[in-house]
Length: 493
Image 1 (cartoon, one colour):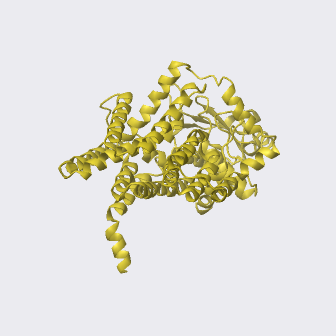
Image 2 (tube, one colour):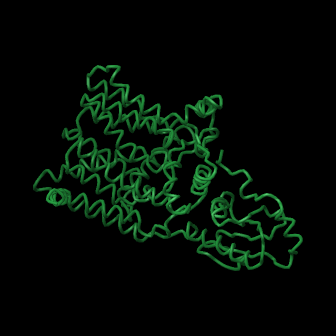
């Protein structure tokens, strides 16, 4: 008991931050669960693993044709889906656990690399920032990218300190996870060699063994899949790098877009509910702070080179890669902004006369981000609304004694996705409208020129034209296979 009390006393601030981070990642969890196609696919993968006992080697197809994400995310979902009786809300629970691990990871890594003060500051920034809160609430395989980078930074620091054996184990695990998270993380691998070179320590073959074993173990699904399918993903990866991916911009405009999206992420991390300066100005201010910290030798020379290289690798690659760039591709740089902020604020805390300024910055930072968080507009077309509309379809179809139904959509391309797993969960036999089964129509967004019978948030429902259907016709249309189970699914291999 005394040890427990001592632990609580010594870690009060960390515990408070963890509790705050937990609240912010679970507040209105169901309302803010943006259920869509990716989450629908995840449900099908879990169903395939649990019901069909299919040990999948790959996950869903990425935005690059022929390249799939690794399966580890879907296997992590399995126990949480089982606990929630196969309901997708289990994914929210799993992501919350990962989010809490992410918060703790920032404390552990920054404390080990710098000191407890930096650990607490970095943890607070990560726990409270609007950007990182919603990154940690995104039920998607790419969510752990930021926490991957903080542990990668830890691995690089181990190399700098000459702890090669432990360093290889850490980066071996992380390299094995790249395919399971985001292939853009490959860009950071040259930093391993840079860190080892700075350490001036010779590499002994025995030091590599644990890291290689961890990397190969985590990469085993990829290796087996490629061997069975003629290295199709390797070919697709090479093709994506050597052929035009038809980006909307190119040349200098692509460079400008890369800087803009990089800056947008940095701005989202810091300002919360206001934007006092442009995105690019925010990045410029952070870089000036970085240069000041290097000048003051708060950031040591070797770390400064590694951080600079980290940024250059991202900006350089995505400035020439002919693919439409999105913000989440650049999440691997968020760690750099958190690190610069952390060390800058910690520097203020180290000066007695400036300590209050450090406290003031953290208070203002939290207020701005919390105001934005608690005033966010909920796009009422997610998990709750989709479950509700499907429950109503099942209820109405039961009242009409329909053994099966058909679904049509009045929406934009792509917005008709994200319902099929929920239909399966409700045990509905769902066909295409051409099957002549009774047609229920889902409308999104609601429109003045389309009359709906019932609304569920921003989604509308039109009931079938009952008089059109006869008992014999319905029985014939329902006599075939359940097309909800047999039709191909975009992104599902």
